[in-house]
Amino acid sequence: MTNLIVSPLALSFAVTLVVIALIINWHERIGLEKDIIVGVIRAVIQLTVVGYVLTYVIKLDRGWLTGGMVAIILLNAAYNAGKRANKMPHAFIISGLALLVATGLTLCLLLVVGTIKFTPSQVVPITGMIASNAMIAIGLAYRSLAASFHDQRQAILERLALGATMKQAASKLVRQAIRMGMAPTIDSAKTVGLVSLPGMMSGLIFAGINPTKAIMYQIMVTFMLLAATSIGSVIACYLMYPQYFNQDLQLNHEF
Amino acid sequence: MNVFELEQVSYVPNDHHVLDEIIMTVPAGDYLTITGPSGSGKSTLLRLLASLLTPTSGQLNFMGQPQSSYDKPTYRKRVSYCFQQPTLFGETVQDNLAFPFTIRGLPFDQLAASAALDKVDLTDRTLTQPIVELSGGEKQRVALIRNLMFPPEVLLLDEVTAGLDKETKTIVHRLIDDYHRQQLTILSVTHDDSELASATNMIEIRDGRLEGQHD
Ligand SMILES: Nc1ncnc2c1ncn2[C@@H]1O[C@H](COP(=O)(O)OP(=O)(O)O)[C@@H](O)[C@H]1O
Ligand SMILES: [Mg+2]
Image 1 (tube, helix red, strand yellow):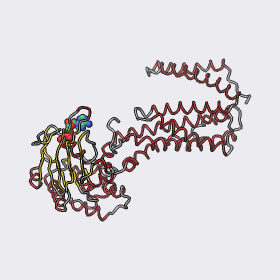
Image 2: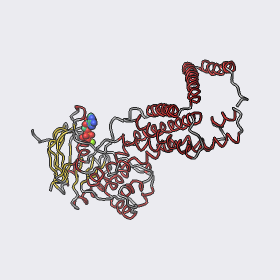
Image 3: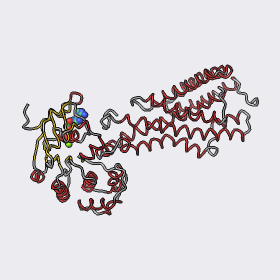
Image 4: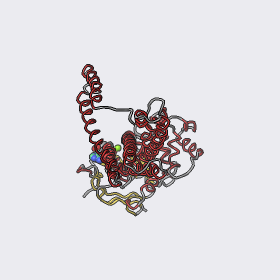
């Protein structure tokens, strides 16, 4: 991996690219200048810190440290997914559980069949990829659930009045929410290689790895993201939708 | 046998006195009409009886047992509530009439559905009709027979004929009278004079209190 070198100097020249975005914003009065600057500064600081931490973790190569990194990734993902279910009770716990199972199962399978090894340089980036995709899927599913329970409130009440169980009253909306959560992953699986060369594959090719090898990794990533987002959305939705009902099988008023 | 016994049943969410200490009994086979001004708590009373709301205090018995002791889905199949402005769900009329079968784990019985539609002067051509194409009166009739695909023991009707034309009102009243003759207990919120005349009992609610009830 020696044929690619991004020197700090080269990187600072790349700042002109950000300036282009800023000029467009200023000229067109889009008003996102502040967000762009904050975003750029955060990205630089966060990635630098993570870079140093990862270097340290990879050099040390201790199981507990790798596990700790995985835990931190999962907690952050659970917090962010939970935020998207605004105000729903137990959002953090439910998201955490869904992410833990989705990431855990996928990761274990990859480890057991030997696709990846339990070393920080493989486990940490893969966990990050799985958890962030599952997090986005769960967030989308939450948003769909909230919208459906709001828009279809009267239809749900009618079903309850006819004697439906909680599951019978809500199964349509739950299925729709799971579908919404998985849609981006399925869409990108369909167009992968045609529209986008995904991050991991681009990175590997960029860094000088043989494209056919990079493709093998990308196929694995596509499969594992399909598994992780479906497991994550299903668990999150099935644990979340009962929160819309009270113990007397009535719709809660607050949501 | 009393179908309902209410002892000081109140519904006071967040200090808002929607219903106050209702005392009443409803014998089996009764056809009780409920009148009263708008906002007096009539819908709330029916929703309490349907277990779609829970009293904040008081005792509500169904068939001699506390309402809270029943499994909700089972209870609501026995005590069926028809909404003031019903919403049909799904795409077609059949989606609505099939739902009572679905929740009982039964296959849809098209003959039963046709017979039910016939009772309210609709043909089985209606089954495949998209719900967005139905008139208000047709929607109300589909909603009503949706509650009656499997006859309940109690039918709670919330102003089901309000806003209907005279002809449709007659069709709906004929259906209700039919079921009443078959010993179904009916509680109906209504302002319709002809319905008040055919009922066996009448109560009036004002400001969340039963008229004529003294404490
Ligand atoms: N959860 C609630 N909190 C506060 N007020 C409520 C609640 N539910 C109903 N109400 C109020 O109680 C009153 C009675 O409502 P309702 O039973 O629908 O009356 P009616 O059917 O007689 O027109 C209305 O003023 C309504 O706004
Ligand atoms: Mg009302």
